Length: 482
Image 1 (cartoon, rainbow, N blue to C red):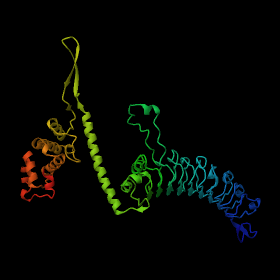
Image 2 (image 1 turned 90 degrees about the horizontal axis):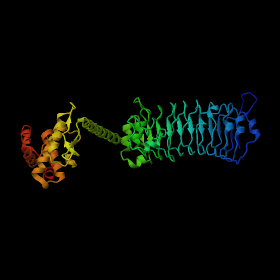
Image 3 (image 1 turned 45 degrees about the horizontal axis):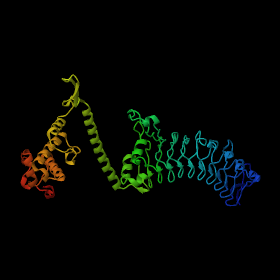
Image 4 (image 1 turned 60 degrees about the horizontal axis):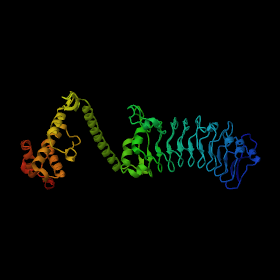
C-alpha cells in the first residue's frame, strides 16, 4: 500500500495523507478505518476484488477516484447528494454495473469512465444532464440507444464504441454545444446518426395505393445541432448499409433552414463500413456533402487528387440533375395533353345490339410553353422508321430538341439509304459526326463528309462557309468511316 502525505492540513493540525494507491492488492472489502483519512484527494484501488465502494463517500475532499477492474455492481451510494462534493474524476471501468443513478448529484464531476460494464439504458443516468461533465466514456456496454444523453453544456468528448447501437435514439444529443468528438467505432450495428425511422402502419404496407405525397414515414429525422463537433468516428459500424453514407450525411446534417448542423467537422472515419467497401468514390462524396473544414477522411489527409475528384463528381451530378429536371418537365408537358389517345364510341348496330368501336384521335398540346423544338421532335418521330430503343436514337445530354429532331431525320435517311450494311455503332458515330459538323462547327475527314452530305445536302453549304474541306482531318476518321 502506498500512502503519500503532505505537510500541513486545512485545520492546521499537522501532516495529512492526500494520496492512496492500492492497486492489485486483492482487496475485497474496505475497512472502516479509511474514513479517518479525511484529507485524501486521490484514491486508486484498481484491479482488486471490491464489491462495494460506499465507504469512500465519507472522503469529502476526494478529487480523483479510480476503482476500475473490480467486482462492483451497485454504486448508488457514490452518486448521492453531498457525497464526494469535490470529486472531478471517477473511473468505474471493468466492473459489473448494470444501472446508474443520476450523476448530476456530483456537481463538479468532469470525467466519468464506465467502459466495459453492462449498462443498457441512460435515461435514468442523465435525466437532467450535467453542468460540468467534459468527458464521458461508455465503450463496451450493452447500450441500444443514447436516449437521455442531453443537456451537457461542457461535454467535449463522447466515447460509445462497441455497444449495440443501431440508431442514436429519438431523444439524444440535444444541447451539447461544446461536443468536439464522438467515437462510435467497432461492434455497433449503427446505420444512422439519428433516431429510428418510424415504421409505416401495417395497413399502409399492405395497401397497393401509394402514400400521399406529403407523407414520408421512413424519412430520417435531422441530426441535432453539434456546432463544435470536429471528429466523428464511425469505423467498424454498419453505417451506410441501407443507403450510401454521403446521402445520409447530406440529408441529416442540413437543417430545415439550410444551415449546417456540423459546421466545423474536421475528421470523419468510415473505414471498415459497408460504405467504404462498396464505394470507390467515398472520399470525393464526403468532401462534396460535408463542410469545407473537413481535412481528414479515414485517418488520411485530404489530397489535391481528392479535391479534383470531388469537383468532377459535382459537375457530373449537376449535369445529371439538369437532365432529370428536363425529363420531369417533359413528363409534365405530356400530362397537359388534351384528348384521349382513343375514344370508345358506343354505336347501335343494325341488329339493335350495341357495338363497340374504337375511334383513334390525335393528341394535341394546349400548353403555350410547348417549344418549337419539341414540336419538331414529335413531328419527326411520327413518320421516321427509327428504333428508339437504340442508343443512337436517344437524346444526348444537353442536346437541344431542335438539333435532336434534325439528327433523327438524318438517322432515318441513313438507315433507309444504307440499310443492313451499318452496325448500330457506326450509325451512332455518323449521327454524332453529323451533329458536330452541322451545329458545332467541327472538322471531319472528306470521306465522312461525303456520307453526311449525301443524306443532308445542307451540310456542304454550312461547312463551306466556315472551313476549307482540304484541311479537314481527324485521327479517328478511318474508325468512324463505314
